[in-house]
Structure formats: structure tokens, C-alpha cells
Image (cartoon, rainbow, N blue to C red):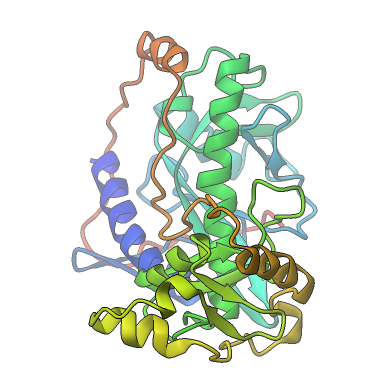
Length: 348
């Protein structure tokens, strides 16, 4: 069943993203699931329609592309048709809408010359706007059955905005930050991406708390927690400072003594490119709060791509529960070898 195969691909993809933050084109081209190899990205076009699949498997979104892929004003995501023909490559993406099959949205990112892809999944096509030649995507399964995807009700819009932030922007931010820091904690140099978060210097709840690498730090989970709690500070000179509460603790915990007290005054592990290093101005602002003993920062942990789904407003839950959400079963060729298509024209 194609739905089952997609689910197995998603489960394996979730593991890969947790381990690496983002994937290379080579890794997406030869993706291993249950002893078989599948291609998750087209050779040179944005819509990938594998042979034997009833519908599109993945779509690519690139910032400098001529296509206007973007957030819709009311918080869903618009994906432009492949130019030249309303059918063609668009046909199988339209089938994903008709069959209610989830797809993968691949977000193109780069740090210097390094290019990676951040997969966002499962994503659902919830509308086919032929007048605008766009598909409307929902980044959460619960939003695929809203009454009117292009004109959300106020309560639906609030939830959709929260989902978009957590499912699209935060994983992309994490991918960029971890790539810049070469998948290492800036404080302790830990090199296991599964244990790394992308920490905001200035909280994303503030206007200048933007999701850019200069406002981010790659941190292991213990140092991220200490940073958010203002138990650990980072000066604009790129030096780690441990607060008095921890430094004056005479406990015998190895974590306390070595992972916290032992790193006081240590220099940060910085990205190679100066453009990717943390903003000194933002560090100064945040360090001032640390020195003054300000209240802890309450920020969203940006760990693996499977960030916990935000609580759904009761009104949204009730409206969606009354709508049809079953998925049409289809078949697929999952017998073994790499899934390939003959080269074709591109959506670029």
C-alpha cells in the first residue's frame, strides 16, 4: 500500500533528520528504507514523481527560485505550479490532493558553499487553485479538512500560524544553525546532532529575535537549558560564563563539576565563516540580562524535526472532527531497487 510505504519513508527520514539536522542531495537520492533504496528528490526539478507511485512524493522549495512559493497570508503555504502546463508534472501533485496522500516538502538551505535540504513532512495538499496556478499546502494533518483553506476562520488561523512556525521555520532554522556549527555544541563541542538544539540568542517572541544564523547558537540540550534559565551566559567576546548559583554549588555531580563549573571562562566553538558567527550586539543584550539575574527565557526548543504539535484549540478540533479525514488506499511498487524516472524538464 502506498500510504504504508510513505509512512515507512517518513519514519526513517525522521531518524535521519534527528541525527543530521539536514540532508545532502546524495543522501536523498539514495535513501535506504527496510533494505530497499528510494530516491526522495528529482535530479533537477522541483516536483518528484517516482515511477510506480500514484502521486508526488516530494516537492522542493528554494529561496531564489523564480517561483513564488511562500506562506499564504492566512498561514498555509502556497506552492506554484510547474510552469508551462497546468498538467504535466503538476498532475501527480494534484493526485496527492485527490487521494489525500502526504508529501515531503524539501526546504533548500545553504551555508557558504554547503547546500543541504530540510525535509518537512507530512505535508498535505488541501487545495488546487487553478486561477492562481498554485497548490495550497497544510503543514499539519489536522488542517487538511478546514472548511476553506484560502480563508481560515480566526481560531483556525491562530492554530495554522503556530503550526507553520513549528513545522516549517524552526526546523529550517535548526538545519542552518547546525550546518554552520558543523553539528557541534558551541559550548562543549559535543558532536551528536541528536543531542543538539538551535538556541535563539534573542527570543523569537521579540521583534528582533529573527530565525537567522547570527541569532542562533548550536547547543547541546543541557547547555541550552542552562542558557534559557540564565544559569549560563555568553559574553559578546564569545566567552562562556557560569552563574553564581551553579559556581557556588558544592555538589559532587560530575555533570555539575565538569559540564558546567568546568567550562566557566571557556571560549566558544565558532563557525568558520564570520558571517555565520553570533551577533555581538545580540549577545551583549542577552548577556546583560544574564548579569542582572533577569527571569529565565521561555523559548521553543528547536531539536529534531518532530517538534511536538501545538495544542489544538477546542473549536478547531470540533470543526475538523466532523469532516471526512479517511485516506484513499493506493498501490505502489516497493519491490526493491532505486525508484527512478527518465530525465524530464524542470520546475526551476
